[in-house]
Each structure stands twice: as C-alpha cells, then as structure tokens.
Image 1 (cartoon, rainbow, N blue to C red):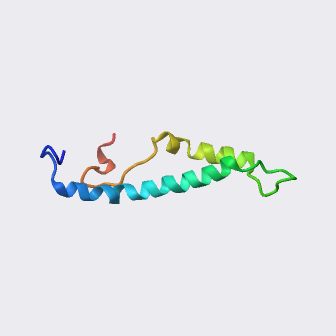
Image 2: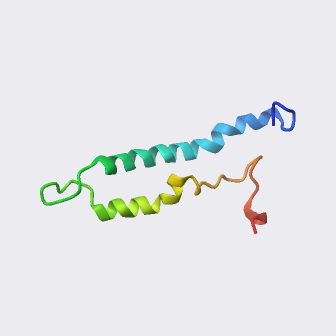
Length: 86
C-alpha cells in the first residue's frame, strides 16, 4: 500500500514493533517444544526426562498457536480494536 500510495510511509515503521512480541514468543515456544520433543520420556531410568502427559498438554495448549490461528495483534494503525468483531 505504501508503494502504491494507499498508505503513508510512516506505516512501515510499525512493522517491527507490531511483530517483535510474536516473533519472540514463537522463538521461545520453538525452543521449549524442541527440547521436549527431543528429550527422552520420563521414567525410572530417566527421571529428568519429559513427562508424556506434560508433553501432550503443552502440545494441546499451543495447538492453535502452531497452526497460526491464535495470534491477535494489538490495535494499531492497521488493526482496530474489537468493537466491530461481532
């Protein structure tokens, strides 16, 4: 839109601020999920391992996140508040 003149150039300055929080959250999620995914299951032999039930809860908790449908951007120049979402 900036290139075609439909939006002001200042709009480009909002990109990093709007997405940094979600980018960091994705990095944090990936780091934890990778750790859990590659760890041995918790057992008597590996008490420091990952509890399979805990792994399943984590996966279910973040299922919409991994599918890319749970991010909700905060109100900004491009995103309005939720008053018209009905």
